Length: 168
Image (cartoon, rainbow, N blue to C red; front, side, top):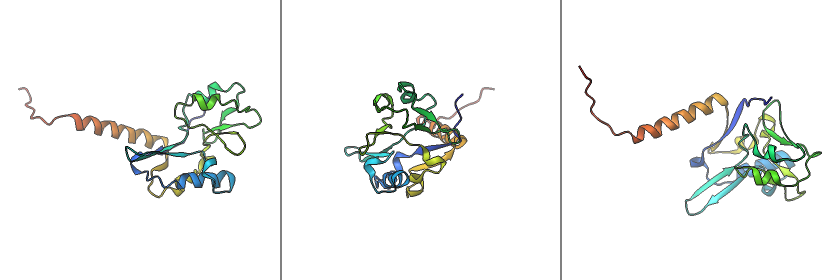
């Protein structure tokens, strides 16, 4: 049985400035070194659109990377629900990288191991370093509420105001 995430790492693309402090925070958290190449979050720059997009594991309920692993090296942390990779089982076949629909499973350039965001054990350092709050770690009920509001605002913006006359 899958554990339920208590919190989610959310991304607000409109707030991301591309400062890459999250990449540095991640490498410090996991390797005690400023080495963004080893980060488990990557910032992609879309020059034409003027957008910076953080790419990080979305902790999918049905994880395609987990399902693709021939050795069962992916599992969930029971306390956070975050995906993690067991280095004892992983053979670095890279099927997980190919199958992740968000492109959020990475190959560590130093030791060719598979890397995925583990939410820093429930206290993601990238969130602490994100000065614009483009990254937030929020309770699951807040994620659903925010998404509902976004959908409602989108629908409301498409409705043309009309004068309604109620039937007698």
